[in-house]
Length: 372
Ligand SMILES: [Zn+2]
Image (cartoon, rainbow, N blue to C red):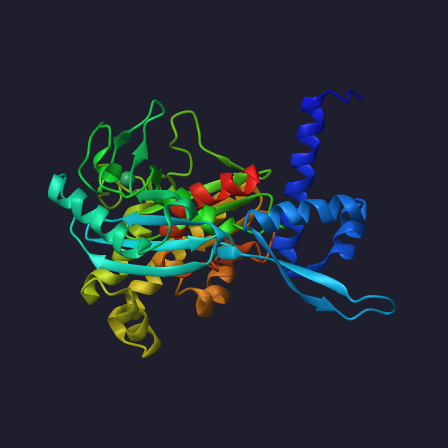
């Protein structure tokens, strides 16, 4: 094995990263336990912990009872040692969150701000980010991700956004007035990233985002599948019913036209919560919408399962309400399953609310975690 200085440095960095991650995942842990778990010597662990504590990423945290000798000192992660902002732009609203290293939301605001491709709008976006970032010192702020309902161009910038009415453009406006470095991302990919964050048990999963537009994310073998044109997982435009209802994209019969959240919330003033309350009360109109919606959704998830053979997570606005209806959805999906499955591959999302905004912030958190 080579012992060149470069390899030596890399090995030291890898060890430091493993130690940081082990503390991060444990919550609170002793030096001795870290050494045993990672197969490293106690002096190596102690030296790295000193560096990570000096950098403000870890802290000494009490002591553990000992079976003899001195009690073992504990160490834990300072989750807000670094923060990143995430903004989620929709046609009518913007959500902004400040996220810590654990993916937790420190602060969040959702505000009505109808999209317009104007400097005034972009300035308001910057003001909202500044409000949420507050007095976070620049050294602790990694950046701000901006998720939007549209497709990125492989060469940079935006290819299109039907929802926002944008054609090919640089998209610089979205990040121009941010008080830090900004990056654009697709809203459903961001939501999928947030959903899968910290779920190492899921190396492959498909995330179906059921918001006012339908999209998703495909995670295969631990990495996000983006496609040749960064358009993978545009599930909303899979043809569900040939010649069916008109989709906002201009084609007929797309999944989006049947399973977008607005299909349910439209008759309730755009309030999805009002739809589900009416459904709970057994209201006739809500029941009939749902009886049409759920079999279409079952058809879509069965196709995704046939294509990818992995867990299918249901997210977006509708996903947040689905838990009580999972039994019915699984039964419908099972009735379509060629291989006789019971629909247990279906899971409701864990991230409620601002998954896209959180995922946008993770665009900065994730590389920072890898760089430690
Ligand atoms: Zn479509």
